[in-house]
Length: 362
Image (cartoon, rainbow, N blue to C red; front, side, top):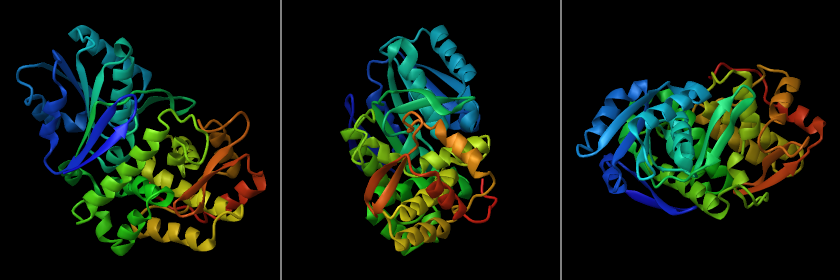
């Protein structure tokens, strides 16, 4: 088992290993009630987890799968369940599921009595390396993804890699996008490991799976510990974790959230890699490396299912925008991110055109 420390409002540990879900008992001390928020697909696993707390009143709150859970109506449903069960500030919320469940449960905990403890048990690769670490929580609105949320750090994150065996291949590969992103912005060793065996990297049984997960989490832990609330506004701040996300979130919105997040981010990384090159900040070899790694593990690297105008409108409401100016995290070289603010529209159009023909990844 590996343990990574995050320094936020308080210090907490992210544990990575096989068969470690039982460690959750170490973090519920003093709770009279526990709520396990989980999607329908994990009902049996939630019941197994509840059985670990025979002496504590534990309720199961079942929510929809994926992004359908991140709505105001589901949020209110969760609040009602906590209210009827008499949850106090000593009690605990546990998220069991993927990134959407983690985002929702974190926001439930952040807003109940102005903040109660939350423990994340991510069950997907994407959730382990992204949503469960860093304290960001949120729900979606008609105007975009995660526009309503809060920073609320968990007391622990338990990444039991046994859960990854139940993921579909496509969902697992989608999660690899966030791992690869961490390689491009901070830890090139991640890229080297994946390049060493592009085929085996597509499976959670790969010998280096735990290492790339731990390395990706370490990248996020280091960045978040230095800039929890994304206030630095520099290439050293938390904003670098959004490499590929401004364009990726636009794709998700245009596709009505039917695309996997990782697939959208993959296309987004190709967009900003090309933008970086066109702006004279990154060499062609690094752009080619993006394409070789992302396509090599089965992620999409092309997108033209929407016009540039549609994508531009969707990007303008991204949380990273400043007034009317778009902001992009770009690369100057592998491991050296930078901020490009208000690029000329001609550069954006040219970067979009380089995405080539559409493919059907979703």
